[in-house]
Structures are given as structure tokens and as C-alpha cells.
Length: 342
Image (cartoon, rainbow, N blue to C red; front, side):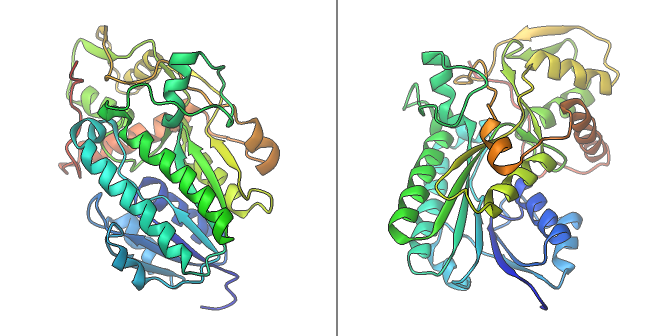
């Protein structure tokens, strides 16, 4: 380890965003990086194994819902990226109690570890799900800025358990940082996608369904809109937020301002798979918001954040990866598409 100017910890570093963040830092920064994860998304694949070959990378396999796991870590990191959480619409509907337990324990354990550490700065990764209820209930403007009030429309609905834990994390990290004198910033991701993103999200579902020759092809939530952000752009925005000298105490929307309908996304995916059949409108998942698109002016102005990859180009790259995966006689790491239960 020579001439390394930062010590970086990535909690949840082998997940989708964590893996890509780790890869970016290894390729673009002279840092010593510790990746901490319990491998809950599956065994270390060949891509992840390549990261660990680097002499400036350390991997810690531990379950950080157990507070004792933090004793394995050092206590003087310059940057801590807190990405670890359980995510996915299917998970919120099937294991909402585990979403609450796991994500809350990860947040509280990390905060209490920081209390007795010498960590300099933390970035907590949050979500646009936090204000989904605000848009539908109160009609707030779209594209939506960071200062929007956060709203849950039905606290008992399992769909919102993920958002509840992310709200806790935002409040927890911002308020602990003020009292314990470490720097902290928040990024809220907006539909980040790309290769290796897992199997419980809309784009992997589309790949699986087109390959299974579904026809007519049901378009769940056809008229709902989203803005999709390719993983490379999301990672650059995340690093920019962490490394900015002026981001302490700030929240940034990381995404793009190109709002498209789910029907557009489905038909563009159908073109990739040469689908020439019928599309049929269908209901969406319960609790899913009608529109979502971030105002990224703050990130552009303060972080020089500038998403470069068009959603269609990113979609092609992503679908190519999943097509290869699903047709190579391998099995998905997790159970995949399930029709919405209405």
C-alpha cells in the first residue's frame, strides 16, 4: 500500500451500486478500499473477484445487522459509503417485516459504530421512494427538487417499508453527524439500472419475460412514468457528492430529467428482443406511484453532475447482459418475476 491518500469503506460494496462504485474508485482513485458485505445477493461472481485481486482492496465478509461485526473494521476511514439495505418491490411485498428489521439494524449499528470511531465523512444512499406519496397525494411539481416533503400515504402498506427505513436513515445520519461532528451527505437515487442489477426490478423482469415468449405482452402500469439513470452516471454523481468540499449536510437527487412512460420502456425492450406481438395494458403493483422524475439542478450546480448516457443506450447494454445471462443455462441468483397481486 503506497501513497494512498484516502481510506474508504463501502458497506454493501458487493451489491449492484456498491460493486460499480468499488470498480470506479479502483480505476480512478488512489485510495485504499475496504468492501464490507455479507454476500446476501449471492456468491462472489467472476466480476467481483477481479476487484479483489487489486492489492489496494480489502474484503470483509460479515453480517452488519450484528453490531459485533463492526469490531472487524478499522475506525479511522476518511470516507464511508453506506449502501447496505434490502431493496426491491417483490421484497417489500413478500418480506416487509424483514425489510424493516434488516435495514433498521444496518442503519442503527452503523451510526452507533461511528459514535466511537474517527470516521471523517459518510454518504448515505437513499431513494426517490421517500416522496412517492407526496407526488400522488399533493400534486407537487415534476421534475421534483430535494426540498420536497417526504410522505407515506398508507403506513400499513408493505410497499412503503423500504421508504420508511430510508427516511429513518436520512434523519439518522444527518442528525448524528451534527451531534457527533462528522461530515455527512445524502444521495437519493432515481431508478438506477444497468448490468448485474439483480432480478427483482422492472428491466430484468422484462428481459426474462420477452425471452420466455410471453404473448400478448402485459404492460403493468403502462401509463406510469419514471426517469431511468444508468449506473455509470449514478456512480459518478455519488462520488462527486462524497468528494465535494461543500456537500456536508446536503441532500442530492441522482438521476436524469428524461421522464418516460413504462409503455415506452417496454416497447423499446421489445424492439431489442424482436417482439412483434400485441401489447396489452395491465394494472401495476399496489402502492406504486404514478409519476416520478427528479429535478437535478442542485447536483448539476453544486457537484458538476452531468448524466451522459441516454436511457435507450443504457437499456441496450443492460438487456444484452441479461439476455446473455438468461440464455447461458445459468439460474438467477434470486426468484424473479411475479405478477402483481391486486
